[in-house]
Length: 393
Image (cartoon, one colour):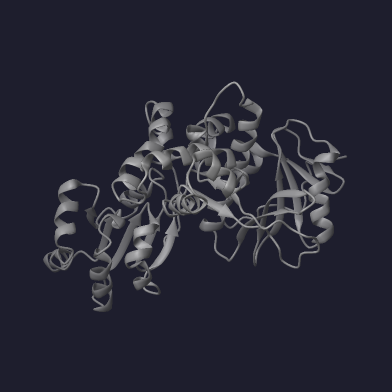
């Protein structure tokens, strides 16, 4: 997995490279910047030295004047280093800093804004299908997700099972992000039922037996650790009454499966549907971050219950996608998309499903999800207006 070409953006000058643990930040940087001066804060002795004396970074730079590219791995471990980085950039000695992080919370609190305008922000995500190429398997992706750390492991199932606990142990506990680890663990199980669904904070609060305010804080922790995200309702020039709540997704469908409790009351097709929608979500999120432009991700749901899973809106795209974990398409599956298209005739709409035929049904594209994910690449339109191989129904 180390040799896969990644779509990660490399801004000019200094930049932050943010992404969940195990998504290949260090691997990509090691291959791209072989001659860089490397400071790995995950190494205990290195962390100890810089945590005690952040100003030591200035001495290291003075001691290696030929090194102009400096990688600081997991900089959130010693966020005080950002002040020294800022001072070094201001001296205009030609340094280029690349700062990786898997938790944005401490960076936001202690200096990331200090570098605004001086350091761009780029992101890593789990593998996109197009990055994996022939190695991509939809069934495997739905079971394990596409986090590089998991897919490269000798025992991917065991690695996935330990992945979230790695975060809880090394980020949540070590950094003191929450006070009640037991409550947070119950929260992870409870919010797994909200993956690919409208987030009902009050319901999650009852399930994990903590206050609503605490749940809202826990959700923010997941977002800051880049393990989960909320997407808002698309409401531009709304012609109908829409709901106000957001939808929630884990950053990887394998992570969702690893925290979702399983039992006799849990239907496999329900989990499979949520995993498929989550896999599409993580691809769209990666496409937006890896592509240039101001595109954003939304969903759409009216008070009467008509819902479209995803709306991508921006200067280069306006499309709506519905995801169905079904190998056949019925016209009733198209109702919400057709309603959305009636309200927004400027948009392109499509239904992604588990079948193998690309169809044009009542003017709505019905696209095999496997093929859609394989063809989704940065800078390439999400939906194409014509396809000579499509069957019209």
